[in-house]
Amino acid sequence: MSGDAELTLVLYGRRQCHLCDLAERELAVLRQAGAAEWQLRCVDVDTSPELAARYGLRVPVLRCPDGSELDWPFRAAQIRRALGAGAAGGSAS
Image (cartoon, rainbow, N blue to C red; front, side):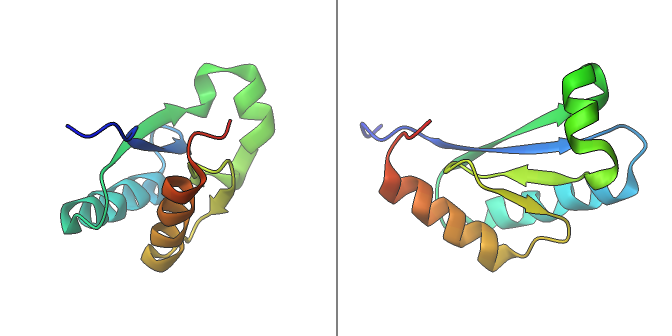
């Protein structure tokens, strides 16, 4: 394994959300394409009052490694750019 930290995308969504399910499936397809090594962490916004207030009906929302957020519908090209920026930018928090 290299010294590079693996990139993480965070998908904010909720249960019983067909758009969230669709976004998760699209991300799985992109991940299988294997352009870069990254992990997907799914977060149910309804588990936190703060997240529910922040995201409300915006879900699904994808938080990129650089901290930017993409509202649905996000495209594969946008995610690839975000992953490239995250890899180039290092571990900015």
